[in-house]
Every structure is written in structure tokens, then in C-alpha cells.
Length: 282
Length: 90
Image (cartoon, helix red, strand yellow):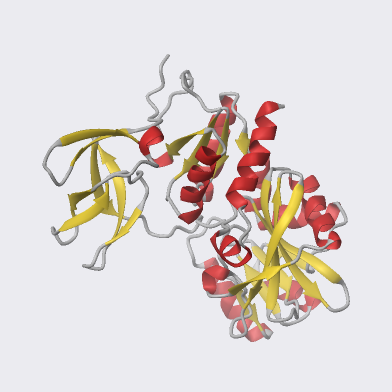
């Protein structure tokens, strides 16, 4: 069996995945996207049975997945999942439609409207880029004055969605959030991401990973998220709210898991390869 | 039609002993390999790189440069690593 790894930067995860593929008796096929060039008429002679999409660039991930799928290859995660998860508004809407609780969220396409939206949500509010990761450019506004400045800053950036303002309530979570990994049809492992000094609990911003026991409620929630967004490998970010319980904040379609493996000892790559092997055999 | 897309990219690399070797990365990744010396594109000094390095691997050089391995017409080379992009992440 041959399993492709589509990538642009080799991180710890990609190295571990390559080793796990070998360990499970398959052949890893590294696919370096920066070397990628292919006409629409071409087909891969020596193509893998399945490709794991690991590009750190969302654009490369999305576009190369479309190309692979166009060749009839299965990709984990598929382009539909990538498209849905990489756009926070798209994720929020689909989760809400499917009755999965999320933080109160809204969208406005003009600064004046965004201020009105924030009044409806209630301060503090969090302004997030519609596409982005690692907590980048996620900002909290305590009041209208601050928000007005943040909106102006966003509008003058050259980001694609600079005139679309995605605002979310600030959830008063404990100094942590939860990351649960969906691998195939299971949610076997998760972590707390703890930060006492920064309300943004991304490990990319210095949050500390701590082991989490994924109980039945969390597992059920993560698998319900999977039913909505599809895919075989997801990182589901969840807030704990005192009154409302679990709120799904975001879903990551190319999740990083170095810290999860470090603190839990769980073999994420091995589990993923094992599940992918089942998919290929079907 | 055979794809021009490089699966299992082959690099020609020069080892310490100054002999030429060709490595197929898709099969040779887990074997034990010596280090190779590659020129730093920033300071010009020699940088020691695993000769089983895959294109896209990041190498931190003591001059402060963050470099990435790439395939320069079949030779393992280093260039300045791509800056974190607006669309980078999970």
C-alpha cells in the first residue's frame, strides 16, 4: 500500500507520519508541493492509494487537494472539509445549522454595521480573520472605542476578507480550551491548552498542553462535528462555558499534534495510518 | 503519460568523502545517512545537512538564517525559508 503525504514544510508531524506509514507496512510517498507541476491531461503513473494532505499553506492544501481529487485519488481530508474548516464563517454556519453549540457569532461588511453587531453580541467581543490560524490577528475589544480601531486596522490590511468583520462573543472560559482529535470514526485523544497569561489559548502562542481524558460527551460532540464537516482527521477546538457547557469554537482540517503526542504519549500518526489503511481496504 | 510531478524526488548530493550519490527519498528516508555540506545562501558558510533531508525541511543556521532544503536541478540545496503566510496554519 502506498500512502502519499502532500506537504510544503516538513514539521515534526510529517516526519512522524512518514515513519508511521513505514511502521505499518506501507510505503510513504512524499509529495512536495513546491515541486508540483502537472497539466490537466497528466495522470500519475505511480500514484499512491490515498494522500494525506499536510500543507501548512491553506491555499496550497485546498488547490492541490482539488487536483488530486480530479485524478480520482482520495485525499484526507477532502477538499469539501478543507473548504469548510478553513473558512471560520462557513464552519460556524454549518455547525449552527446542525444544532452544535458555538460561541455567539456574527458577520458585518461595514465598520458601522460591525459596531452595531458588537452591541448586539455584547462587549468584550473578539474580532477574528475569517481565514487564519494559530490565533494570528485575533483581537479582543473591551469597548466600542477599541473595536473601532481594530476594524480600521483590519480594513487597511491586504487580507482577502479585509472588509468582512467576523465578530464573536468573548467566552469567559477557564484559562484553557480543549482540543479533541477525530481520527477516522473515533475521538481517541485530546488535550487542554492552558494559558494563564493570554486569553488566546493556541499552543502556537505559548499555551501549555496538558493531557485530557476524552469522556463520552466530548467524544460524542467531536464525532457530531465530523458528521457536519466530513473528513478523517480533525482537531476540534472546544470552549467550556459555565452555563451552556461545551461550545465548538473552530475545526482544524490539517491539525498539528506534536504537543499532544508529547503530553499524552498517544501515537496519533500510528492511529491515523491504521484508520487510513481501513479506508483504503474498503 | 508519465507525470512530471516528482514523487520520490532524486537528488544528486556530494558527501563528505566527495563522492557522488543519488538518493531516492521515497525509499531511503529511514536509512542511516551521513551528513552533507551545503552552502548557506545568506552567509556563504558551509551548512551540515542530513543527506536524507526531504525538500521542505527547515534548517536553522548559526548565522541566524532559517533555510529550507530544496531540489536545485537534482542537487540538494538550501534557500531562505518561506515566511509564515497569511494562509498558514492548521
